[in-house]
Image 1 (cartoon, rainbow, N blue to C red):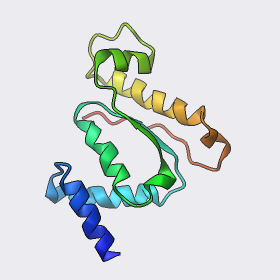
Image 2 (cartoon, one colour):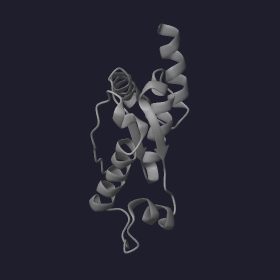
Image 3 (tube, one colour):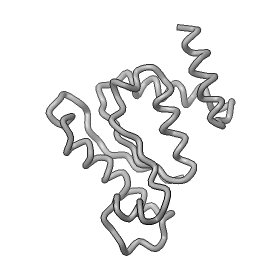
Image 4 (tube, rainbow, N blue to C red):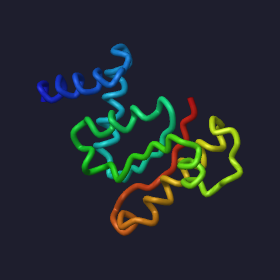
Length: 124
């Protein structure tokens, strides 16, 4: 187990993570993967590192459904089905991205399995 933790640390630290925050982030990701949850994430900007962090910790294949980082405006608009978006860095767009992830899980085969489904919005 100690060896895995060192490998995990190495992978995540190479992803430009602040070493002081690493232990806390790793702990949270391990807790996420220990739950019976299905996760689909849509992230933008600097949040894109969260996908690689989630996938670099053992247990991801049991938890992660998908990770998406719509980078251009067109990709974001199509994901949230809103061509009228003009300001992309808002809590409203973050909420729409979270809702799109939630819908993806609910519309997938995972809804018939015993997973905890929820939607979470984080805006930094």
